[in-house]
Image (tube, rainbow, N blue to C red):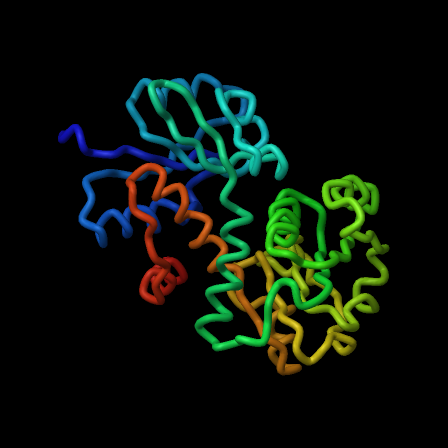
Length: 281
């Protein structure tokens, strides 16, 4: 094996469902790079030993998914500001045996929307164009809110089924985040520039997201971090009302790009061909 052969992976438990190997190995093929990317199942009880084994195997880095995104932070020698503020690590680079953690979910969320706006010629829409409504206060919401603050959203209305979690998350944005009760999720849409679902509601096998978009502004953009199904009931309802819709599959693809660049030295592109392959897998 060439010394230029770059070994990378994704860890989680369970992990068989992960689409990351397909994405990264396709980029390795497209850019003619020598390397591999595999899915490795590591149970929470042996996370430290599992990560140590990756270092010993000579991996250049690895992605982290459920349920290790928070726990792996304690195993990193260095965690950057972005990951600390989001409160989770999803990308680790290994240099000289030391683990450097970051989080690319906020990048993936923002780039998914920016790319959709460019592709659809939605030149009149921007993150700073008005209030953003965020449904949910879990890990995905933390990354989304970080991205919204970074992209200049003037205000964020946050709603979660457990209000206490929303109140805790709102502290990260100080005066730019306002918490509303879950029962008002349809009422707060009036005048919103962006509507984001970060909950699992609407995902295959999960309860539906009950929300009425009739009060949403005609120029609002609606997105869902869920990508199975690709077009959730929320997006279908938005499309029926003529609103701009962005599916969640692009967030998955774009969040993978910075890690690939860290390990392989190339910032890869997200193409329609890659998206189609991921959706068909």
